Image 1: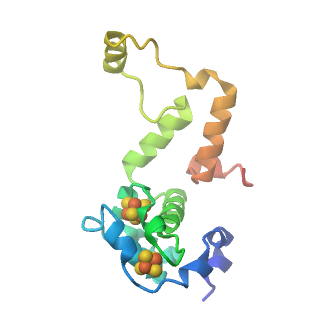
Image 2: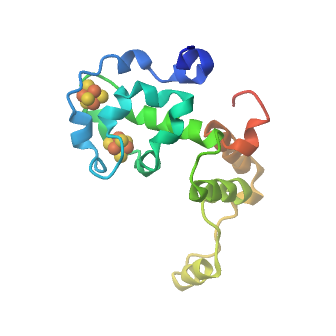
Length: 168
Ligand code: SF4
Ligand code: SF4
């Protein structure tokens, strides 16, 4: 069977060589604020090689989306292994495979449309008015800002932008 890298060169961006230095000490899991709540601890993420295979991607479950991206796991590792990078890569892969949770897709669609993660509601406007914060900045009116939004979403592997081809 072809390796993960042969089937999807983007996996090469993960420093897989460093992953081979994992000594299973568990320091990353001890440092993870979600270790008791998630399906796979940072240590398991690094070492469950089979979960990096395309046909097993749906086994990651919700835990990969609950990662806070706090990078405690990266910082505590004395071997220089990047468990958080595994999470990021897996998220990108799930996203493009259409396996992201509905809420994530909704946030991405709103971000793509307005440049904001959440829609501005009447309640938001009311609260801003009460706090003298003025109108919400209109990202969508700034072509340069929206181009940056597009690049971010494309790098995150947002499916509607993948047909454009190439990498930004
Ligand atoms: S801290 Fe580093 S070496 Fe230790 S289990 Fe985690 S990834 Fe492996
Ligand atoms: S980046 Fe994610 S996996 Fe790593 S310690 Fe933080 S919450 Fe846990």
